[in-house]
Amino acid sequence: MCSLLLVDDSDTDVFLVESALAEFGASFKMEVARDGVEAIEALQTGPDPDLVLLDVNMPRMNGLEVLQALNGNMRGMRVVVWSSGWQARDVQGVLDAGAKAYLQKPSSYRALVTLLGSFLQDCA
Image (cartoon, rainbow, N blue to C red; front, side, top):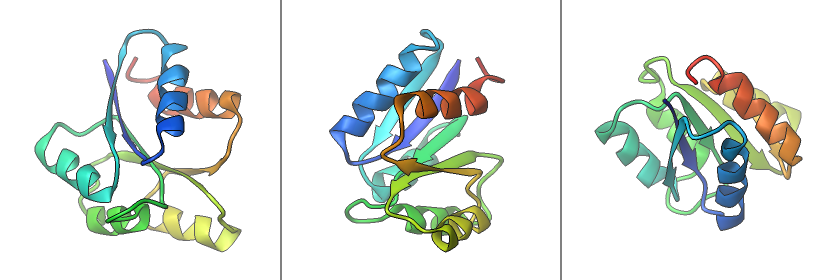
């Protein structure tokens, strides 16, 4: 069973990811953290997820701070940043910090499904 940690404070985005995962069947477990603090707690206390889908613009601790906190402790985790309002230099910064990919919000539903499929196909 594949596991996904979605780090996002938007109910709409949580619903969108749940819908996208449903296209792959019931072999996925998704945990939601509403900010970076909850994400770090989930990563410290639970098993490592197969994929972390990470928003940047969140309260308390943003996604960049999460990447910085994980720096050196990624343990093979794959992190994809899914956020809005970024320029090319910002994207390169999150990739340099350890993210495997970046997907611009708002993105098409199909782009999200394709991205999730490309990262989760080997654990399904």
